[in-house]
Image 1 (cartoon, rainbow, N blue to C red):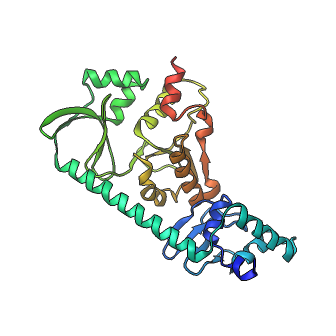
Image 2: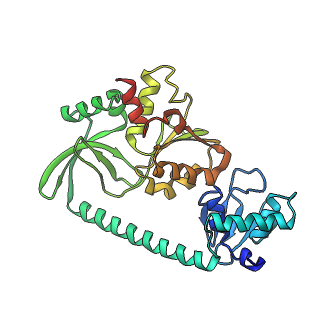
Image 3: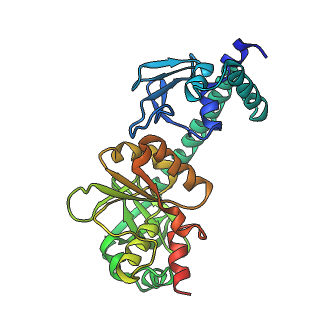
Length: 313
């Protein structure tokens, strides 16, 4: 394998396969927290088209070989090239032109799927008519809350009750509003969004705090607050003043990430599945050491609500 062939291996794929994550797309580059020095805000850029990297914090850049040389300054040129050749074979790394084609195909698939999801959601919302949004009191919904071991007082504080008509039939559900004036609607039979999908933001003390907690769904938030209020020394919920962010689905991660920049500490309480772990990784890639992955606290369970329900068995 020639040096030119090794140079042409995709830096982006190499970063991903070596646990640097997916990075954050800004303009023409993918940005990471620098692997060459400690930092909290990503300033290490990879240009996929040119297959080059540049570290804005130190003012240096180059190709893949240069990067490995910087990461392992004590290695000889032979050690660097041997290491990269092994990685190319073991991790099945692709050359940048081939990998760019793979990325374009994946992006086209993603855009197509997003378009279909939006089309499906729009069609549902066109057939949905909200009749009323009232305080949460319906016996069937309160029973559902109790079965999920959520504090009724906390559920009433953060949720409403929505009555709506869909395709000529009437329904009711627990409603949790998002920043786009849509709402997540839940009952024992149904899980859907009414209106536009987006994240939810709660400033619990009326003004922005220095720390925040991130949840995947609103039942996770309610579980966290229930643990805080009713189960002392539970080892799951942390104490302090926080702002709360609810993704309402990991697909909203791109909306969330820019809003987290101002926080000194970001506590992630996402699900213990691949989607939740990838979402946490995306936040970590953006904000580095400011991010604390709290999912280890309930690692035996899929999510916070599963953990809360287990505490009551």
